Length: 126
Image (tube, rainbow, N blue to C red; front, side, top):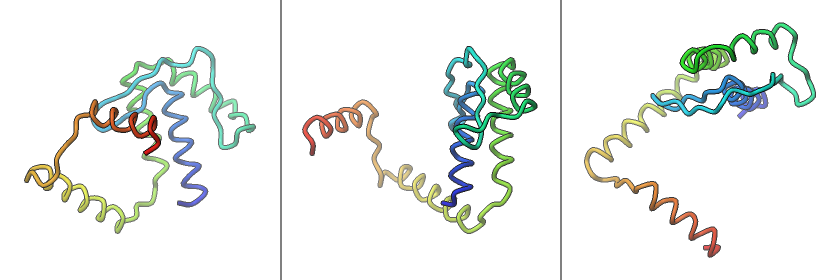
């Protein structure tokens, strides 16, 4: 992953958080919008431009659904180039996993059980 790509991913998460919504598949996980203005930028100490800060404040006044749509559009705009080979490989992997689930080859584990296993490993160090 390139430095710029890492920065984009980091900025994407922060932008979504600042807008109050993170999209995951068809669902949205929401956090309350920040009470005070947040000025995210490319660097920890770089303040956001006045124009970007004003735009952020306007975006924060939108409904949750509007913020989610806006955030999705902003994220898409960061990935202007598509790695066709990687995209094809992921599509094949997704199709394979769906087939494994549909055929019964792969079994799902309820989240409660997974969480319990993780907790046990963390507690017992195994």
